[in-house]
Length: 218
Image (cartoon, rainbow, N blue to C red; front, side, top):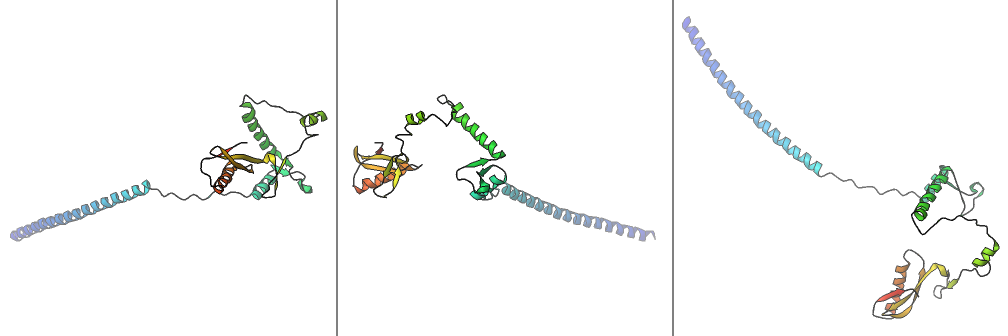
């Protein structure tokens, strides 16, 4: 009886040891697989982190939409609706060129006047302010030439057959190599010198001249 117990116990001990060794090997294999999975997860995490950093380092710039420019009718409606400015006698048809200012319009007009006065008068040493009446003695208008000899000199164009005011024309002498080849005249504008130079250049090429083209005031 004791021999069977010893054999059974020895067999049981061998089974326990074998089971323990098997369990350890299984646990080791599981631990190895777990480590491999952990390393794979770490690689994926690092790869994902690199992707995140790359996406952060290179942000996508959205295209800006073109700014909306309101139409003149919209601006006029806003001015009327908010009380900035109205056409004079607007209820009765209005007068062209005359306007009435509402509460907000008066403030805006006053701010513009103050800004202009500060820039054009206060910041300069050669200009002073003057406020005088527009109703003057007839002798003032006679002395200024408005009564007897006031007129607007006009100029007739022989090419276009149109008449222009002399004070609204820009004209200059065209010279090539110091010699006068003619005169050019254009309407006053922001590009009048460029237009005059282009006209003089056509004149120079038509005359087949060589040399530097210069515009000078006569």
